[in-house]
Image (tube, rainbow, N blue to C red; front, side, top):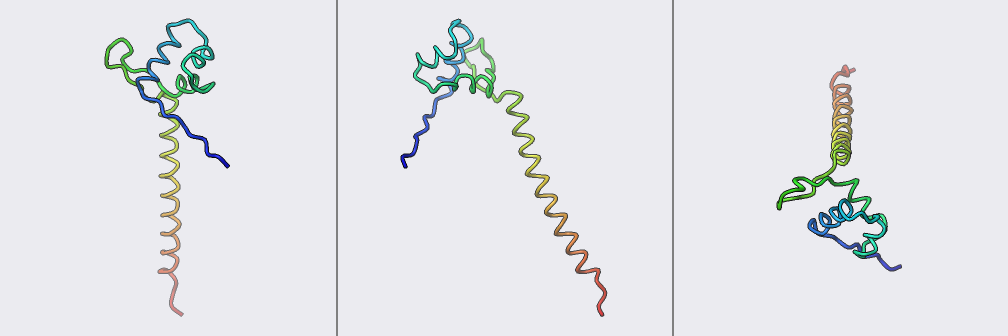
Length: 102
């Protein structure tokens, strides 16, 4: 089975593509065709990132509020699972040490 090779796009390329989407008046599909990127990729970038400082030369991509919230939820779920595991270990330990010798 042949593996698909995933292309990685630079932040500058993504910024320019999102800028084209915002300013050109063309549809996302047309811009994707013109740039030779996968269908739907531009929409994913638009949902995933927000452009910080769009009017300056130092424009950059930052995670959107939704993406940041998703990452925080994922981190908190991992932390909760860890704490729950610790609690179960402590319960078992207390149980072992609290048994009376017969």
